[in-house]
Image 1 (tube, helix red, strand yellow):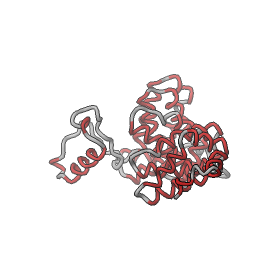
Image 2 (cartoon, helix red, strand yellow):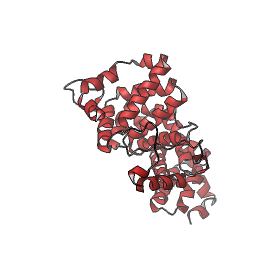
Image 3 (cartoon, helix red, strand yellow):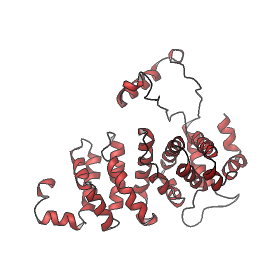
Length: 297
């Protein structure tokens, strides 16, 4: 109920956005933690589950499939039979979270009565979040990674995130030690690369995005693999230097390995990436010398 009331109070939301300056967030680590936490709680719904820490028993002995199974088991239990959770709160419905995310990306920077004209506007909230991620603690970086994942789920949000420097923010988060936060940042980066004209990104950002996308293509989850391959495919049409960087990082092999997936969509994504790699002189030379002949049979 509180989030519903807060969403109706646009002046309060705007105050949350405008009170801290970018310099404040850079200089005060505690403020950056509070800011990132507020945005995270605004964007999260009750469907966005928080996994128990795997360091604690018995979760430390469980794999991803085991955690999924136990969560499904708890969901089927009667309410009174479920294990108690300390400090559990209701973060609200998925619909309310989507409205909050839309406001964060599309409306947080608008002045009263202002409408979007021309190209995508840069979300100042995303810009502030980038400052938190760049200068905050490891915990702040993890929170920022999850927030960026929430915000990038809607394709219409992604151009505004790019305009606000969101690509560089994500590139600063793709090597986090926490598995879930790292996957969240890499998936958000892949989703942006799928729909974004590479020319809208800084050239250094295009180059730096190649490695994390290639690494995501080896993930155990097919959706992440598919999105990584599609995002990489879009980037590979940009320049020879990008294709060369991908090939040097064993990108041709990674794309070829997708052809053995049981998922037809993943196979197609792998083929599309290989097609764009065929524009590279290195790959053309391999075919001319007959070294790639067996790989496409």
